[in-house]
Image (cartoon, rainbow, N blue to C red; front, side, top):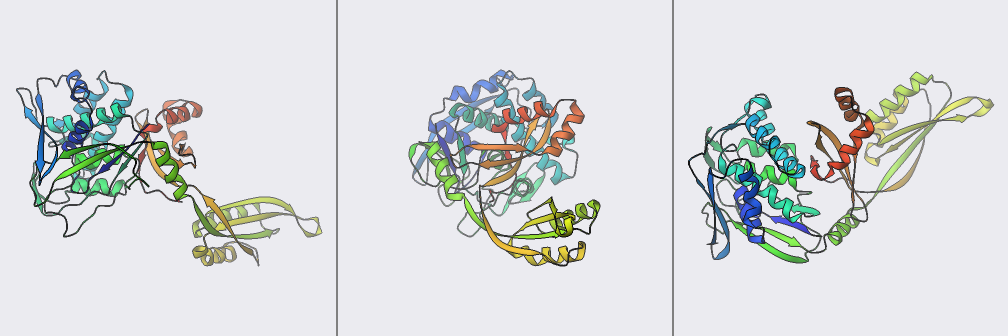
Length: 410
């Protein structure tokens, strides 16, 4: 059992990740076998060297292009390579999701349909090697948790197939926006493209969180050097941690939080069921965390409805106003309570070529549990004819392919 921490303090790029995995001890055959199996053996040569950057050692990779090396590929062509490959399903999913995230970012940046995206840098041989190689390395190491530090934004300009672009390039900004990834910026960082679309897409899809482990019990360290020359060391570290269950356990325990909440309550006997249903929606829209109702026996043996709303203190005033503006009650009871909550975050996973909304929960024993959005399951069930039970099981089977779309929240 192991966890990995990608420390990208001076840069995050696909070639740096690949070099760090090789320095960590992943055999080169693991990297190249899936590439050769899809017919790329004669398209490139992977060169791995021991180098130094400002006195710090590490591995550096470079790609030598051979006879067959088309520089441009469409997303459909890359998708066909993935789907028709003989790889394990878990590797196919990882590679597919990384490329799909890049395709989505490019489609938004250029204002075109995702199926019309025509890759240039991303479709080139070196990017195929980086993405497939990193995913294969991760399959080999099999970490139970993958941390990544906050990447640097970079600054200045960079030359691309689309001309000269500002740094961060548009695709990096789009990935950061979609996956809610913060980027460090400031004068302490060198000018230049420090975080590339390929590097950020790999970590956006494959990492579990963009933060540091709660403690370090280090087993191995792999150092990957970048190809750009700066006025400081240009490197990325992958730190292999021992006892990942301990990491997850401490992480979850540290993040369980106590929250103060208000419970607002009214017993209503002069509203129709339709009125009650509308009131529940108005209270939620006003900021209630949750609202419930149940039947109660009121004075004079009249049947009424007890409505309760759980509210954060900062939203209490606007929810009180909703009670009196949208309901028939002339008074509400209110009391201060509290609740213990587990960390959770939203995301998605891909099943049957459809993206399903997922909520991921971090349990006190370090386990992750997931729950699919019911509306998405119903939509996919209608589209595919498959039962909700089968779709839920497929979501569970794909839980390792969860793509976070926000930070942990309590």
